[in-house]
Image 1 (spheres, rainbow, N blue to C red):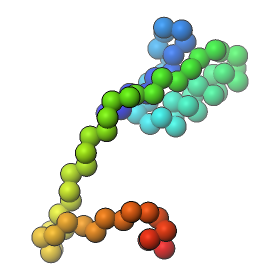
Image 2 (tube, one colour):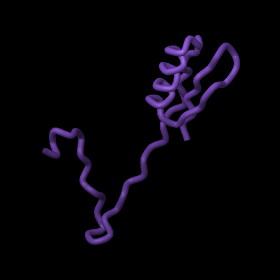
Image 3 (cartoon, rainbow, N blue to C red):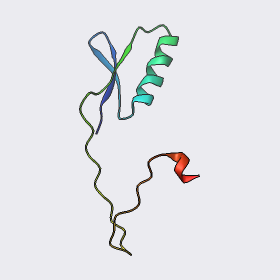
Image 4 (cartoon, rainbow, N blue to C red):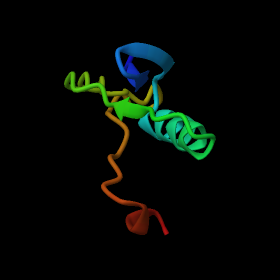
Length: 70
């Protein structure tokens, strides 16, 4: 699981698995006057497992972008 952190100096204020949640939290604290910053998790993402369709025995079709869906 990813661990993006919102720090106040060297003190941990908040930890989130999604970067956007950590950024939103930090922005709210900054609006309150707390000088905090986001430290994104730099570990590489784990590769996703191929999902097999149980009816056909083949992998599900990969969608490369949302435009291809529409």
